[in-house]
Image 1 (cartoon, rainbow, N blue to C red):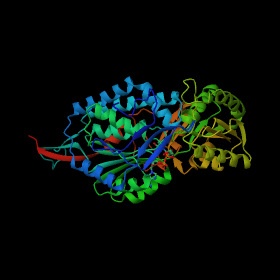
Image 2: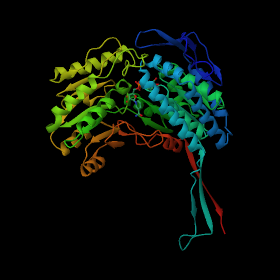
Image 3: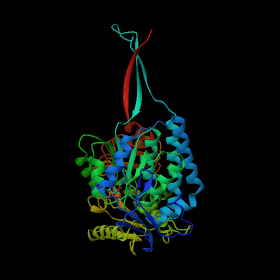
Image 4: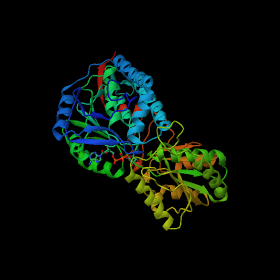
Length: 484
Ligand code: NAD
């Protein structure tokens, strides 16, 4: 990466939006601090509404003529550059997010997968052909389809929890389909998005194709979402903000990837040790800050005590501490305010009769993995999204009750079922309200390629993942030709 990503000797950087290949510098800045110590990691200039309009103007005036092979090469090269500098990247993401190096290294592996899949999909022409002589009144013609980039600009708005891969999931499919995209990353973690843009440029992506606008979300977000030249808004973040964006977007395509309170459902025939391992990882990795983190553990009563004992041992063994220490499993959450919110949600549950079995003691932005037992399905700890490493245990008697509890949520993102019984597994797959159901895995298991996304308050059912994003980012043109 040419500038932003080299962090071997860390000096706070003075950064700014990437508009038309230039870094915009302004006195009005956002400070980015390492959540573990509060140390200044960098400042990022706040773009004005005028800057955002300028970015749209440049993008709208540009048409990419990159061939499929050129797009493939640029995306593959971007992945190579990230791999070559993975130590610097991991440190950058850790510094701006407080995620442990173990977590950010995992994010980098996922990012390289996203780039690999987008590069390969750029080579695939999924046009269809229909013969027209297939009914008695048919004709000697064929109908063809082809996918074209959008006429207008894509606006992408991303959350803090995977500072790089969330951005790559929006941008790589846009490059693969020859679109123009403007990213507004989270103001909490803008540095990775800026460094990623630089890496794309270095790999040969034209600067008008990908721009990054940092700033006050309400000010620049409103311009990007409502400008008539914006054809599509791809938003990942909370349900509250997603619904506001949907309301203001008006007559244009909106893809929403929102929150979740995903259940892991442990049935009485499960391998309990394996279930405890998966639930501990699913709830606590990335400091519990994943839309698909396990946010409710539904356990069948007959095995609940044994499962909880195994789970507490697994969760208690996770090492929390300095995110930059390679031996740390769990770093901080995004900031002290977030940690206080998690602490308050757990205290509320305890006030309603729940019991903390391990963890629970906050220090600054550090909130340790915390198992909370005796949670009832109606407590806000499990009805609201608590974005941190909390593992609430809800007991149930039979499969029907587990499905009823799981489906009572206003969210429907992902779920997992831990069972060795195929009949029970298939019943859960068909009856759960969820965009994905993983049997014998965590709710968040996915490939970066495969369709991903939820319904109800988790999204409108339009999926992401590289293939679906490329469909969202293109218009199908149908044409027909005489065919003898
Ligand atoms: P958030 O909704 O607070 O912010 C997301 C983005 O929206 C940020 O870039 C923010 O600056 C921007 N934003 C805020 N107000 C805006 C406005 N008025 N106009 C335009 N943009 C605005 O979410 P967060 O706290 O960054 O991320 C956590 C949330 O994201 C959780 O709810 C999590 O479940 C969700 N999430 C969902 C997925 C998914 O794929 N379904 C993935 C990751 C995170």
